[in-house]
Length: 201
Image 1 (tube, rainbow, N blue to C red):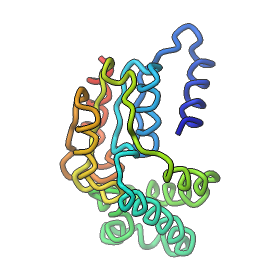
Image 2 (cartoon, rainbow, N blue to C red):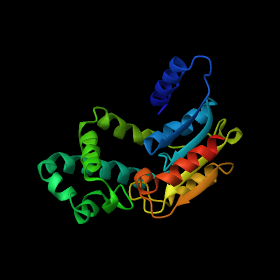
Image 3 (cartoon, rainbow, N blue to C red):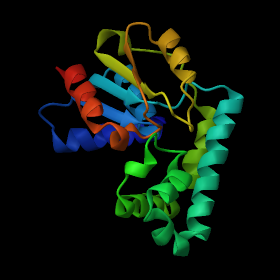
Image 4 (cartoon, rainbow, N blue to C red):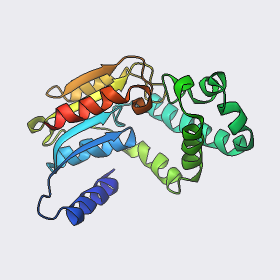
């Protein structure tokens, strides 16, 4: 987590040297990185969608196993995926782990997501690093605008973890996204964009 946050912080500093502080939003692992940047006092605001780090040992292991299984399935079943993803029923079977309404997804986008997951070069290292990460110290987060949002149909990081986030960050705004899965941007892009905009203003 610290290495990823270091990389984002360094990138932002190189792109915007005159304004080292920035608004940040992230999802899942990216949500954990966003909270870390806010904890450090680097971010001006944070919007985190289902961020990692509010799990217990069992739910953390479930996240690792389910992502690994999805990646393996994507690799093994890739030749058959175009025909399966072409139908709404097929998309519901294949992608309900990640999305609340997979039947609405664009088939080409689904296949691109699978290819990105299968090809991710740092997948194993990131998955292993989950074991050492659990949110604890809020740092500077109570002093900036923070929104934590969780989809009600999140099957990767089940929404009960939102209660732990609310207890750990009582000063933040906590939002439930009805009908959304772990990746809510495809399920309800308007609400996600609105949350980011309102947190940053």
